[in-house]
Amino acid sequence: METIIVVVMSIFLGFITMVVLFNFLAAPVIKKVDYHLRRKPLVSILIPARNEEANIGGCLAHVLSQSYPHTEVIVLDDQSEDRTYQVVAEMKKRHSNLKLFRGKDLPRGWNGKNWACHQLSQKAEGEIIIFVDADCTLAPWTIETALGMMERYGLDLLSSFPTQKLKGVAGFLLVPVMDWLLLSFLPLRMVYLSSHKSFVAANGQFMVFIRKQYDAIGGHRAVADQVVEDMELARTIKIRGFRMMTALGGPSISCTMYTSFSDAIRGFSKNFYPGFNTTPFRFSCIIAMFTLFYLVPFFLVFIYAGYRSAKSHYQRPPASPSDGLHGRCGDQFDARGRGEEDRMERPTGIIRRLNFFRGLAIIYAVGLAGHLIPPLRPLMVAITPYVLLITGGIVLLPVISSRNWRTLAWLLLAGLATFFIEVAGVATGKIFGNYAYTDILGAPLFGVPPLIGFNWMLVLFGSINLAQIISQRTPLTIAIATICAPLFDYAMEPVAVSLHYWQWHTGTPPLQNYIVWGVISGILCSIYLLLRCSTQRTLPAFYLGVQFLYFAILNFIV
Image (cartoon, rainbow, N blue to C red; front, side, top):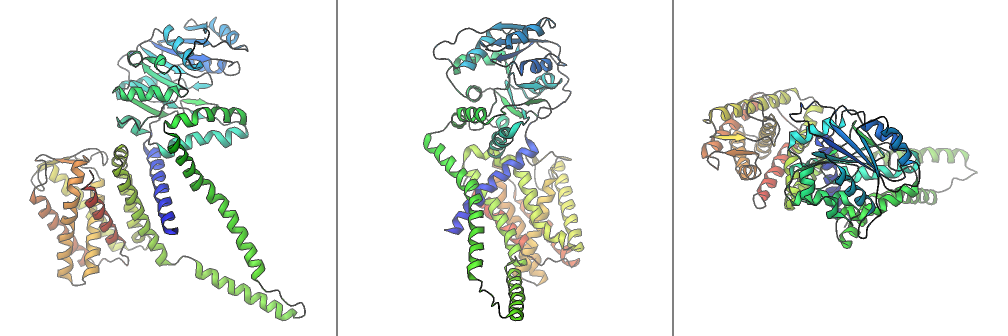
């Protein structure tokens, strides 16, 4: 049972780690970039405001100082009970492009903010409409950069999660939970790359629409009674086949959401459940999972520490007061004994190696699980380069740490040789056959992603390691390594083609592809043996076996 729990938690935490790493490396961010706009249409910046006296002045000061020139700024005062209207009215006297009007009474069947946004959209004249919350601040380049992203990526909707400015104890404790949920469970770039409605996220604090597409999906009228209207608008955009992207605010958009516990709890409780868009049973399972993985271990640490403390107190025999010397010697002996026991409990080199093996197995198990779920498959494909770098690093770390210079020199040779052979193969079509790489494995250099050389270096290293485990006789070692690499390629090729890592012009790889890789493997194995390279670990062979099994199973999935 303990093993099952460890495996399940490892897979879950491994998945989260991969999503976090993917977001760290690839999440879109709105930052200052000169996109050289081809067109500069009129932009309507729409700000609904209710009791925002403390925020609206600062928000408008930033909105009205944008570098993009063609804007109209429209503020709706949603029957505020403070001086919101008066603050905006004063600023309106100094800015001709600022408009202000009072909102109408809330009709039946409408949510308050949705009704305010709908009224704003009716007043807007721009080809682009941008909804901005009154508690947001925009850097001077924000609107121009957002339009550049819309134009470059062909977007119909761009939304952003502002950088949160934390104030007060409630802000520091509760507000980061929102970003943690977002960046731990949703790969943000997949909102743009995948058409599947599972990859959806949007934030009503900053939403940029092409007006034509906004009207086509029914605007806020279509989500009149929805609490999480931003997510529903985004889902509708996806379902209708329009393109959207969700980005982080970065240095461009910031916000102070909540400063008190009551406001934070009220806000999150209103949006938390609807935001998941799932059944009560699934939502209960999600909450149970969070509790099990994040809260229970925290309390168990203190429970276990208390148990160990109580156990050591009651099990240790008391020293006799009359035996001072004996008592002191006993204490010294006991301390030495406990020290020896502690040293015996420390992880040995074998356990550390087993941890490497376990790490590789968990990473590829998570990959298989992801490919089994169709909505997650695009994510698995997108993070492939990072997975190869991480797992390859795990394999190479023992070689690097032991300063095995001969083996490191061979690895460098194998990586460069296979990369440039691939370059020649793609350029001529005569070595392996006619094929071409996509950019999934990274930007091509001379038509080949550099990661290909890295991957083949690891495959050949694993093949040689496996061959040496089977036999120490040189001819047999070379023969086994010569067979292993083409066998691995045979299992990998159908999956790689299906997932669009590369494409063969004939549809399938020719026989010469496998023959040539066998020859290359044999030559590099011979060089490895001539250089008297070695490794004391079986990790490269295990890596090759795990990858072979991974691709063999994927042949039946993708």
